[in-house]
Image (tube, rainbow, N blue to C red; front, side, top):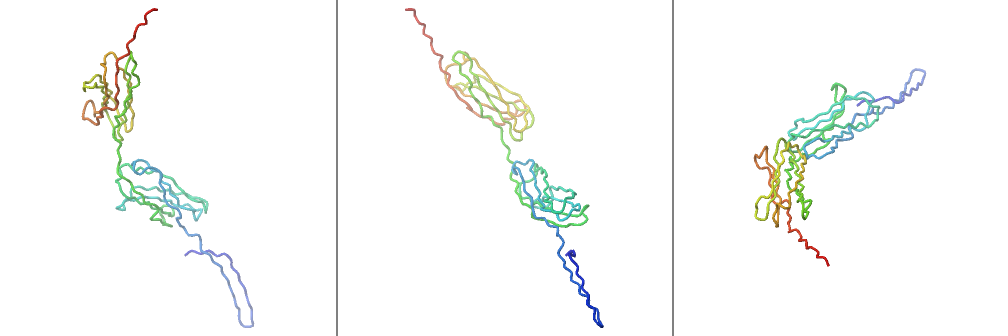
Length: 260
């Protein structure tokens, strides 16, 4: 243990044949280097993206430069992330450092954070916290393609049938895709078809606005179906039948008004 002398008192008693020297020394322990904080994380560990790591070391024991180390290990005790800084703060200053941790590609499971304070250049470890935090990364959740949004905007009696569609790319989508929108009558016959060729990125949204002349459609029930294909009409990625339905009634008959 390190000590520092606070006060030193000296008393001398002189006798005929002896000299007595009494010394009283008061000592107190020097400030020990400790880690009184821990690690907290901000972000979705199941998203397998970038997580904010907040490493709290507590008040520093010295104004001298210190090496501040934060690291994370997997369940096999293999280091998968580390952040090291050599910085000096005024004695007693709370030390909190913030880092970014990219969890993409890490296997699901438990991960443990550790903190250390050392002299510069790893000249000596002053304190270590082997249980700063334990977190769990979940399974990769990939959002599939969404091809289920079609809206009939207008059914003008003597005009067009206006249709609006939306596709949302999957969470892992990359490259070219074919987006297919189809209009079917009540017998299942295709009445109209619209196609989009797109370059997709994860979560990208694609909208379409289409019109078909009411005069080309027979009276009856109709449904809209949507599909996504890889590349140019490659493998079927998703098919949604009947994402919207409507009834096309006969236009009203205008009765002439006879003069009185």
